Image (tube, rainbow, N blue to C red; front, side, top):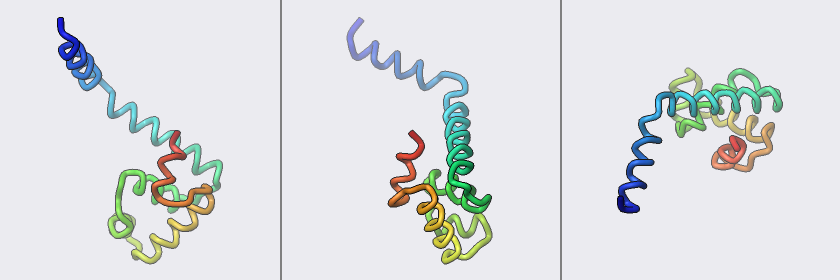
Length: 96
């Protein structure tokens, strides 16, 4: 069997594992909960963190949470400060 076939087989096996996405989602949720507790984030900040980690823009966050974009930015600045993150991108580092 060729090298490429084995690689393709292992990729197919990983992709078809039951619970793959669900497990990842649960792990991210657990990490977010832990970070939120450590940093004493408010529920609003925790919700924002979750949405930001999903790749949502501040405008999207505002619509989803029912707040203004300016208020979403305010909460983002607070949670970045509390978590010791320099940017939204830096939030992903905290998941490790």
